Length: 388
Image 1 (cartoon, rainbow, N blue to C red):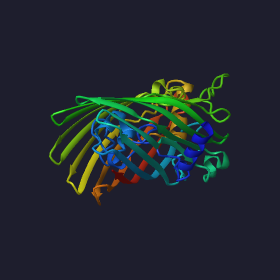
Image 2: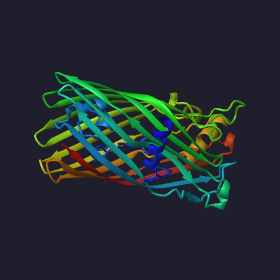
Image 3: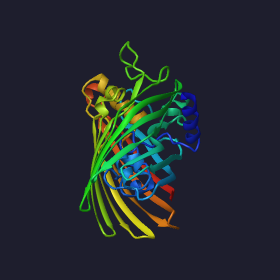
Image 4: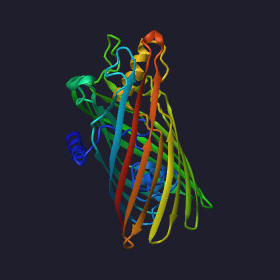
């Protein structure tokens, strides 16, 4: 069974992947095209089969027996690193180096089935996130030994949801495939977690709560977050995410607001990097008619990377994160829409522009200077939906 799951996930990853697509920390802002067009919202507002990615409690809201979505996001990152007068840092002072990690495609596939008016279940397979860089083309950064890191995370979940009197609850066992490539090699791992969701609707107002547990991967022989100690630490968590959402719908209009807390500070690996918990706020608007819909959104999450340097350890944490895992993207502007071909078939499109940078001042006691990481992105998402 484990081998079969791994082969299925690897086949999905073969669609393509990029090694620098962190947006909200290590996670994408949203997984389906509808959610991404609305700033990554979707915890309270039903979005068809793709709600299986965002809040499994919402799948009971389907008006059809079965809904299917097959989609993908093409992500186009632009990642740079520069340092000015930082003792011990690689690269030439004042020179900006651009990562050559290329574009990639992240799949998102979901099926939901409404068994009766009270119970629904589904299956979701989607890219959760990842991050990394590739500076090997720059001899001044170390050439073949320069940072070359590639973390990819792919998830399969099976949501089970029950509803009564406008209140829905769901649980979803999660199987996650992780692949981490570094200069020391590449390690893959399959780990377990869970997701739980709640939703309630009354008079056009919808409320939602979603919790994604941390998932612990063990990347032995590749990863060690305790380089300054004698005890190796090869475990790296996909951080937990607690999300709350509220939305209001009236006629053709829907507005949604989501809040997320990403638990980096308690995630193995990231806590050793000194990463902070990340608060994410997202807002989205939709105007929908029976044949088409238009959507816009905005998503903001402050960089979780450490910035205060007070010790040699914190210097290594801040510099290592900026160079190797630059999850500094903060502001995301999104738009998109849908077109309905028939009662059974429709297509969704979404575009995202995101930007972010972080400059860290180095105290004179640790050599002085400053270093800067940037991570700007564009993405295009498309999904084909079928329901019957």
